[in-house]
Amino acid sequence: MKKIEALIRKTQFEDVKNKLHDAGVTFFSHWDVTGIGNEKKGRVYRGVSYSTSAIERKMLSIVVNDDFVEPAVQAIIEAGGTGNIGDGKIFVLPVEEAYRVRTGEKGGDTLN
Amino acid sequence: MDTALFTANNVWMMICTALVFFMHMGFSLLEAGLTRQKNTVNILFKNFFVITVGLLLYAIAGFNLMYPGFEEGATGFFKFAGWGIAPPEGGMTAAYASGGYTWWTDFLFQGMFAATAATIISGAVAERIKLEAFMLLAVLYVGIVYPIVGSWQWGGGFLSSWGFYDFAGSTLVHSVGGWAALITIYFLGARIGKYDSDGTSNPIFGHNMPLAAGGVLILWLGWFGFNGGSVLSADPAVTSLVLVTTSLAAAAGGIIATVFSHILYKNYDLTMFMNGVLGGLVAITAGADQMSTGEAMLVGAIGGIIVVLAIALLEKLKLDDPVGAIAVHLFAGMWGTLAVGIFGDMASTKQFMVQLAGVGIVGAFCVLSTLILVLSIKATIGLRVSREEEIGGLDDAEHGMSAYADFSVSKK
Image (cartoon, rainbow over all chains, first blue to last red; front, side):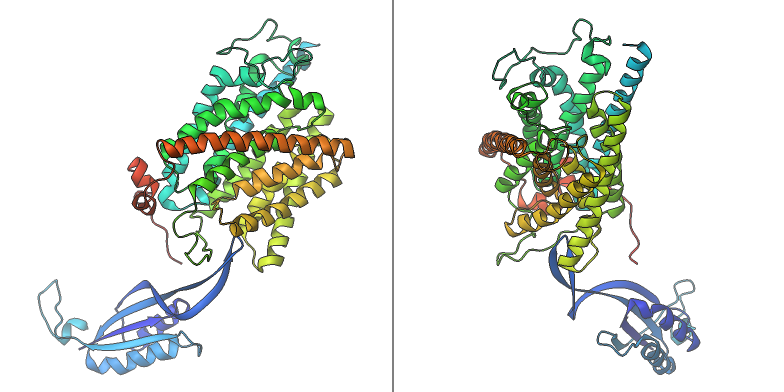
């Protein structure tokens, strides 16, 4: 079992979600995050110029069995990429155990 | 005068009174919208304080301070006609005010104006003034300074005998509030985070644009009463002209401020659009009954440009005015007053000099009065909340409340 954490553009979220579904990954969590990075956007408010280094992205948290890792990662790369700097990052982490709260069973089957 | 006409005049003046009252909602929403969520209860509280206390003070002393009935030949600088309000003989008949309105209408219409001066201060000092300091300042300013200045012109004092002209109060209402706002924020200092130690200026975003936009549109509506009622009767030709000049100036001020701000900053800033509309309204207020349609648009348009420039100037001077109150009410107010000497039926060099003198004298008196009030408050109860209170928000620090307890907004 592995956990895939992915930071992607908000604009790519729908595409990534659909591609993950196609790859057989049908459940995962996601939330809006704000991070700091190299990207800066020049803006003006009431005549005051400023640049924001606060970058808004979507964070996905996906736990899958090992054979789904490669297809899921490929799905995110394919659908999440625009070719521009700031498309995001993907991290793959080991997962020690998984439990299903309803039944108490554990192991890879709980992810199906 | 025929009773029907007297009644019609009085009804119009009461409608205008209600419209000016409604402007307090406009100010409340605008100030709330252009400041941060954590200070919303505080802003609304101040606006409630200003309209309630302002009206009571006007009943107790303000009206009689502003309309004391100066004697023939007196300098007309200060006179007090006594405490409380009671209609004079014939105050309810057409004999009073040439049949334009009753004495009661007169009191309430003027009373609705009075509170506006402190409301202007409220926006500029938002997000860091101590509530009690603001309340004290508002009481003294609306109770004493505003009616004394008003008596010089509308009460028949020395400015009116000089031939100074301020139709509905570009100077007497808007600049009076604007001067106090300017002096107060100078001593109050900028909000934490507004300017870095190296001098860089940071934006502090208003938290609710729909509220701010609604506020501005309500203010425009209220201005039909503010200027329309300043005709002091329902005179068909003059009232309709005034509504037209008022609206054209507002429209021109908004558009030109937006275009000008786009040329300077390359963006379409809604808050500049809104401030431009208000700048146009404030600018036309001194001469709304004197201008042709073209002149009204020009006065409003220049008002819009002045607002954008004044916002930039205050920013450069590190004077932090969260809602643009000083740019709108002081700068556009001075411009509108001077414009009576440049455009319209009264334009002449002599008139311009009188307008300039009026602007200068009112300014000097307001600056001096505010200096005394603000420095006394600073030395006694203090002007500003603590750093912790400011960062945590005045809603929590001063009121123990939250404006949007369990309300949340979706993030795109």
